[in-house]
Every structure is written in structure tokens, then in C-alpha cells.
Amino acid sequence: MPQPLKIVYLVEPDARALARKTAQHVVEQAERAVAARGRARIAISGGSTPKTAFALLADPTQPWLARMPWAKLDLWWVDERCVPPDHPDSNYRMTREAMLDHVPLAASQIHRIEGELEPETAAARYESEMRNCFRLEGAEMPRFDVVALGMGPDGHTASLFPHTQALFELGRLAVANHVEAKDSWRVTLTWPVINRASHVFFLVAGADKAQILKDVWMGPRDVERWPSQLIYPADGILTLLLDRAAAALVPPPDANGCGTIERNA
Image (tube, rainbow, N blue to C red; front, top):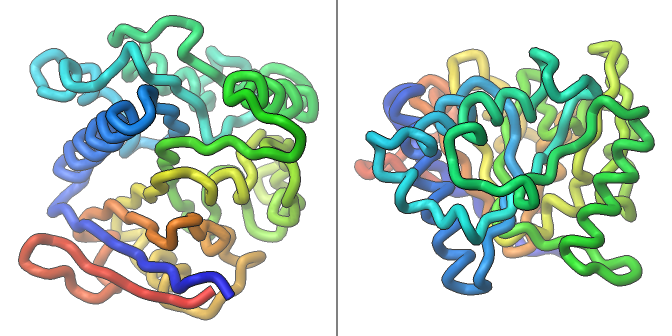
């Protein structure tokens, strides 16, 4: 049996403070990876709260722009909508506008999902790029240093949506996933890849996420209904960065804003 999952959650008073904590957290994890392995390979997600954190990372008036080891960073995406890179719904476009246009990252360090391609082709090309960049052999999977996730109001994470085919994929690194509820195609990392990362964290904000956060991490295990429950990092530790509104229904944190939940597989 896998070891129990220890969920460590850090609660900030509001969305702005949460964005600042996120920027700090990403920089600290990148510094740790570079110190240990000489490079930081980070997979990021889209969304409004990450966008604010990305803008803070690129802001010259903030401390993180100078601290981030940009020259030793490789940036990947957890998932992408199957749209062109200049489309308003593109996670890549959001990241480019908020951060990439303002930081010293070379094109060779930016590994986007080619959402403008046919979905299966985009997934295959993304998987091929991972295999080449991580120098994988056979059935090996990449080990990202950091994977940053969000959670939808339906309990999805990445583009692992409830009752979709991607939930059952164990061998691929990235797959095309049709989301019937949204009548759209996505490309997403698979959950075994996410779980192999050295550090995985969720970024969750807003009162509309309080109930689903409680259901996912304190309710019964039902991964087809709540795919976020598939995230079970290999080291047995999962970090949640929350604002006070999202954390309203989990056990109150301590005086330092930290709490823990333990659950079995």
C-alpha cells in the first residue's frame, strides 16, 4: 500500500497575498532544484491567480525577478487548450503577456504545447520534446522539479476532467483529452508524470472553491468524479497554497497559517 498522503496547506489572507506567496514559493523551489541538480524544470498552469504571480515574478520592483535563476530554468506547461498561441484562451499567451515578455528566458528554455495542431499530434510532439529534453529511455518518465496545479470547481486539475479518457492513461507522458462538458480538446500531462515530480503544489483561491477543496481532500476517494484526487506525489507530500476564502471549510491553520491533513490512498 502507498504511504499516507500528507497534505500541507498554507493560508494567506487574500488573493493578492496568495499571489505573493506563490511567487516566493516558485522562486524558493527553483533555487532548491538548481542547488541540488544544477537546473530547475518547472511545469506551470494557467488561471487568474497564477497570472498575478507570474507578473510579480517579472516585476523589477519586486525581489523575485533578481532571485529567480532564469539562466538555469526550463519552463513547461501542465496543460493547454487546443487553440493557437495568440488565442485569448491560450495558457501560453497568458504566461507570455504576464511574464515571458519581461524576463531573461531564451526560446530554447520555453517548451510550449502546440495547441494550434491537431490534438493527438500536439500531444505526441509534446511527449517527444519531453523525452528528448529529459533524455528518457524506454518507459522512463520525466521528473519535473516543480509542478504547479490549479483546481476547478468540478474537482479537475490540469486537463484531467471528470469522467474523461485521460484519467485512465498510465503509460503516456501527455495526451489529448476531449472534454465533452466544454465541447473542447485539451492536451495535458498525465497524472503519473505529475506524481513523479520532486515537488507538487496546488494554488487555489476564492470562496467558490471552498466546498470542492473539502470534498476532494477530506471526502471519500472517487477519482473519476474528482480527478484532483489522482495527485499523490511519490514522496507522499502535497502542498496547497490557499487564500482564506478557499480554506474556509478545512481545519483552521495554526498561528503561522499552516495546517495539515493526512489521508490514505
